[in-house]
Image 1 (cartoon, each protein chain N blue to C red):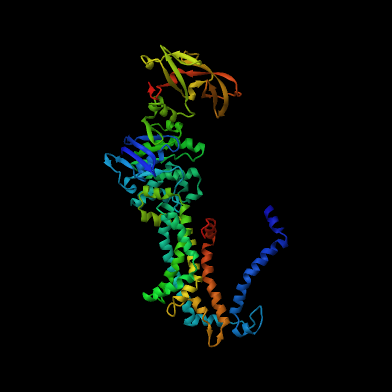
Image 2: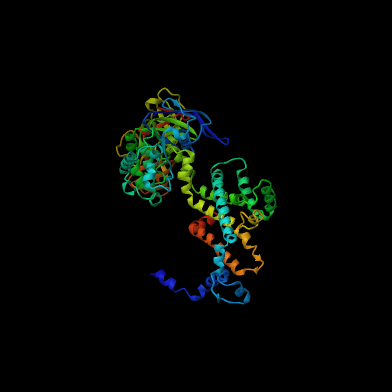
Length: 275
Length: 356
């Protein structure tokens, strides 16, 4: 009762700042959506808040033209491969860091983080040269593996935080009860850190999804990513801005879907200082 | 199952956690490891469980060397001080997990879990999430899991330390009965002498990684082998003073004197040490017997704990504590007489060995 009255009594001026903040955040997204329903002529023709000639042409084009929708399929493919590889390899690594002490463990753990400090551009050329040499160029697995360089350390870092929150006695008790290590790990330990796995997978997914430089360098036709497709739209017809906006709007969707599932756990990842 | 530690030691990073120790526990006995924190109770339990390998020595179960047998194959159960349960399992699945791993049949699992849950008053919670239960209930789940397995060796590491007072009292009574019925050999680690006495069975007193003495709980309480053991097995701390024997008389110089007990006859006249448990110092000489000797001292602090009072006092350079029933209030600095029960006195040689 009391708290209800208090909520109702929030003066308008106190809502002003968050309102403006949200407005500024949403504005580019609104603009993108609005553009995606306009024709390129209208976009270039002048300033308008709402699409005057509302059109779904742009979206229809993307969903029917293979050069467009393949971009999405290619991206999704290597992103999923990358997420699976990253989490699969990070799980045992993070377990070792969280449960065992070995020579140089702390240095190694920190070194993992420093991997993320290097800009991807540094690795573009060596990766290109290497993959061309071993016939991996322009394949999904090439991009997926390249992204592992950044995503495995990140996943290890996140998972280690979640794993260290589980007391070591849980492992011991499972052994006492008769669980073998693999059975314990899959049946008890992984469910216990499910939220951590979710958060790690989310960050791998997002990084791999938005990363452009490596994916663009390592693919040409067969595995061409959506990011690469979007940046090559200066066709003979000039810039197809409407089409580009529609592609951009569609690119936001997978991230939004994934973030919906892990929204409750991300805060925990942040509070562990691991994200 | 009998358990035997043969010269087992544990050294971690150059620190000795357990000095070479030999200990032999009989089949189906209830054994208590009693010692302060860091005395090595937990390490001993972990060595028995196989969670740690001894740095030297061997662990034998029922006449077989199991030093290098894995935890999984030892058929043991363990309960920790912290309430450790499988967080993502329901209460039923938590209790059932050792049976499931052992590959028991569904209906047998259901029956056994049902029985144990009944025994530990967990029946109504079987479908619940572990995290939604109170600490006491969570520890009951851990105990149920240890019981359901009918393990040949059950290790309990201060299982009641984190529970509230009432629950602790209640479980303390129930535990020996539960485990006696299960036919397991039990090793129970605790830091509370009172708990060791209530649980009965056998006790091993530990001090700084060494087993000081092992034997029947009542024997060890009444006749500790040395001063260290008496000190471990007394709470509040045992009162000590130097005594002097001359001819047939024993005296705390300047405080009190009495007839030499039987065990002292024929011993040389010199200094010895006396140990008196706090409850052998009463505030009144009720029986007016000649087995009580008056000792006077200055009150330092009077603590009232429930139905008994602890009077801390200074007696000629020694800090003594008297524990007696009822509520007695004294002010600081007051001079009072306490009456020492001669039959409760423990005598020690200067090197700490008991004289019985």
